[in-house]
Length: 212
Image (cartoon, rainbow, N blue to C red):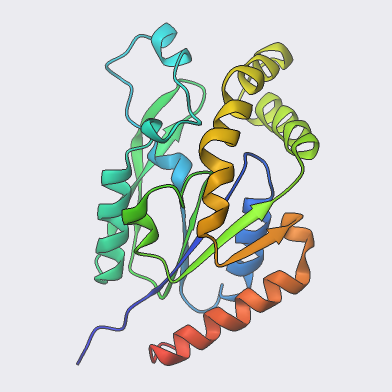
């Protein structure tokens, strides 16, 4: 009997654009079916060989910050119905954590991150490609609140990082990937019409793959 191929959904967009809200909205629909979220952020390169000061200088919004080889390998394994050990990233220590998360094969794989549409090999694994498009002023406010509350950053450090890396990298690498998206979703999780369309499309693919 042929192995049923899972559906891979790529959700890209700028930092704090609402990608996570869209991801959760889709995840909730298929919660009782079989779905997993793979966060590109968890696949930042291991930096344990660097000093803490050197880690602070990492440009996390550049494509080279990610271990895409490992990410692609893990997606391919999930597509082959094999389990993986998803890495965990420590945002306080700025390196990969010791623990991993065991992931069993599923029917729906949601790959979420700022640059998931930047890598051609990664795009080729996706059935649906989304880009969440949100105004820059909303994104910087959300990032400021998140990084202070969840990642132990100071206001000054968040603003400095935004001006020196986040904004220029968005314009250089993230915004151009919009052209690869099948659908562009304005305003993230607040766009219920776009999310409903995505859910319908995913169900159609699952039915075609004889998964539903």
